[in-house]
Image (cartoon, rainbow, N blue to C red; front, side):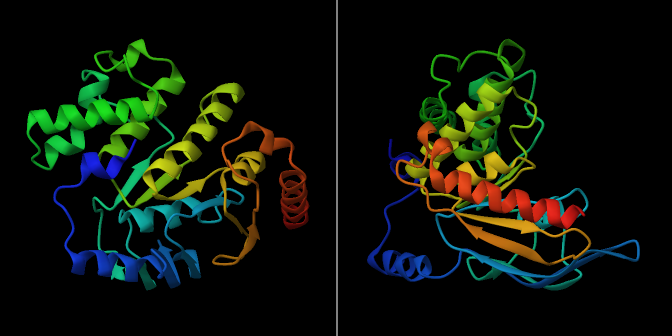
Length: 275
């Protein structure tokens, strides 16, 4: 399914297409020596990196290393104390529709149906009911919730609720999707299925994803690049590139030599950092 045909508000002019082509060669996200101080203590310090359009970046690291703080700065929930954070060459000054956040908790409205939960952001942005319904129907199909549009969250499994939370973010058609351990609360089999679904959805929507996890296997399976943030060294991280074969969402990639090799490298680096 081509999400752009469903969610685009109007056709692009030639000049707009040229601007999009120019933007595609620049990083969609950039941190330049970003720091955050809280209560007299550095939470992040001089963190610098860039993310290319369409990449999946997974972020690993011990508790307290600044993973979620970094994600909250990208989301616009926190403002840096120093440095600059940019999305599409614009300084991040607060939350915006170009960035969607999928939380660890399902964050659904229990009194709303799946359809209404998905359409919530569209209602807030002033879309009429027919537009809301059309997008909600298409996005429900995209995330595998077709036929459950009239169900309520309590009638869904944990995995289906997280799909609904994901669908609500996708309905706003963000260019960057931020995911903070979204599958931590589901069982292993469901978690692996959702990982495969994320890569399928990413292929269809072309969105950029930053995904925080504590699971090495999850990080390697999903990522184009992995940022391993370092214990006690705020702003420092090791970077690993993952070159798994297409289709990236194939379960066979979990047995691929590249998967096993990168997994071992990260495991050894994390053990060395913990010692």
